[in-house]
Amino acid sequence: MGVLDGKRALVMGVANKRSIAWGIATALRREGADLAFNYAIERLRPNVEELVATLPGHERMPVMPCDVTRREEVDALFAELQRRWGALDVLVHCIAFAPIEELKGEFRGISLKGLLSAVEISAYSLVALTRAALPLFERAGGGSVISLTFNAAERVVPSYNVMAMAKAVLEAETRYLAADLGPQNIRVNTISAGPLKTLAASAVRGISAARELWEAKAPLRRNVTQEEIGNVAVFLASDWSRAVTGATIFADNGMNIMGATE
Ligand SMILES: NC(=O)c1ccc[n+]([C@@H]2O[C@H](COP(=O)([O-])OP(=O)(O)OC[C@H]3O[C@@H](n4cnc5c(N)ncnc54)[C@H](O)[C@@H]3O)[C@@H](O)[C@H]2O)c1
Image (tube, rainbow, N blue to C red; front, side, top):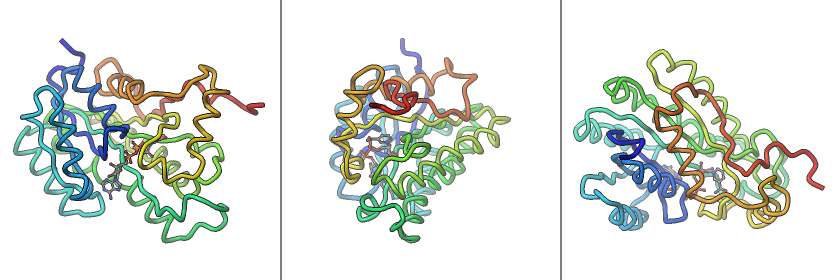
């Protein structure tokens, strides 16, 4: 018996075994959820399929193409879920992208094109995917939308630049979507995770230094793990969090409470 028995969850954003989405997928599966996955580009398909094949019950788990900038792929993904499940309980959004040249240097140097691209893929997609999931959530009697953020939205983190702007949009969207969709029993929350060495994070200059800072200065004096983020997602996907919506939940070993760290 798991706390997510009978729940159907779409996990978006697995690229490889280090992906936060993969940590969340394994935690949701451990608790009994049925899962579906996407891959952003054809090159990632074998990775995702190989990982999914390691999960118990993988024969029932669809792995579908979906680049969030392609409307037809978003529509096709939800049409396939409609055909297979007819309803959806949980949507996990672990998607972020910014042009690499935008993730270094002085903030004043950001370009409009880079900013728009980061916001489109990393933030607007939360609204577009939630909207596409609505008919399926309605058939489930409600839903839980979970995304990932980083506290560079509220505090200044060198090099995060356009991605920090995208995370500020994502966190505001979390509140607006929660207010908009609450009457349909759809909850929307975002997890603000500490730094993890993933593909996306390796694009940001200074990820290793950030992890050293966490070990030295975070109240719990360590870095977070994929599994720990997965467990927070289990809580948000489950009925245990039925009173929680519109929240940015920190899973960062307490770093967000710190002022000057010297
Ligand atoms: N790693 C960290 O330190 C950290 C900390 C806090 C929050 N986050 C957030 O966690 C989430 C997951 O990132 P991650 O660190 O696991 O890295 P990751 O590289 O494993 O995941 C990012 C995913 O975004 C997908 N993606 C990019 N462009 C896309 C598009 N156009 N359409 C569909 N998918 C697309 C990639 O394919 C990849 O699967 C992101 O929102 C990231 O900002 C990461």
